[in-house]
Image 1 (cartoon, rainbow over the protein chains, first blue to last red):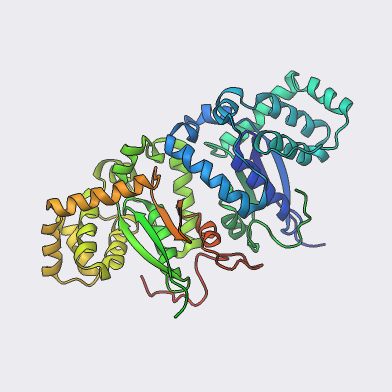
Image 2 (cartoon, each protein chain N blue to C red; image 1 turned 30 degrees about the vertical axis):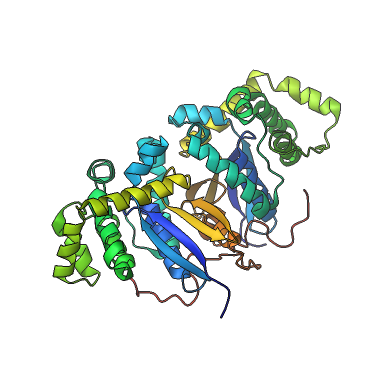
Length: 214
Length: 234
């Protein structure tokens, strides 16, 4: 048996475009690197509040930069990500609490589909193309009901608090457990640094031997 | 004659640690990639003011993250970067106006030493925790970079002329027009288009924009390219 896989926790919120990019990159690498990727649905709003940070989009030049950045990253990372037409309404007003509670319920009951359902939710918010995640209507309805239970609400709170304890001031954060040490990296543009911390090879955001999922 | 080198403008301030990292990476690649690297000394304080942004260090968790991040990047990028003991005083109180005016003067009169003098100023503030606000400090950096005392003194005097003050203002405004809300920003001019990337962690994306071949090893498998001689700079 080979060396024990290193645990990588990815804390994310579907409201966060960079979370989607980080997620796709790590999903591609989970069968290439010797890692155990653990998805941690979190609530970005809670992290912002707890850290005293503010959404970058509130600074006009940052919003402008993000819009352009996402366009370029769409090509570079090969993810069909696109700014929603009513960006401010989506991000700052509608928010993501129900979606993240839903993913929390999925993680509790059917963790094996968490990756697919997360992707489906990102597709709805951040892409024009939406696919089916392969969940039956009954399954989805059942989970939707569970989403508003205290158990699920508390689980989302706990996961969000865990991210805060790791030092999060935004999302995505990736926490790597390596040789008894914990390293937190923020953003989707730090995967090369993550590779360095893991002692793994970085092959860009679209490594070879990736099955085209999108 | 080969294809025309693409111009990369690097807007930086020696107060900014990530500017130093971006600077060293691009300096290493300037003789590897087909680029013409143009250094643009800018004033971070002016960019913050103009964009409505605030220093990240004012958010406690961001300050904590930066402190750790710089430690890791020190190894990964191989630059002897270290947080000054009294970070808030250095960054938020003392600032970098005189240093950046000096570099502006260097750029106007002796651009061939701009890279070296910039590096020596970073070494003072972001490696040896030394002052960069006093005239003697700036002169010491210039001399360490190979300038004579007379040359350095002459440039120091020029630093307080309107010509130099205005040049720094113009460069800073140019960064703002490119959309800067912080530093470093790298502006790549490729095929008649302009691309601005923020931060020192976007060099792989920059390589992608420059059309640098991205093989299985990645476009940029290391911020420390093969063949780079250790010890040359420090």
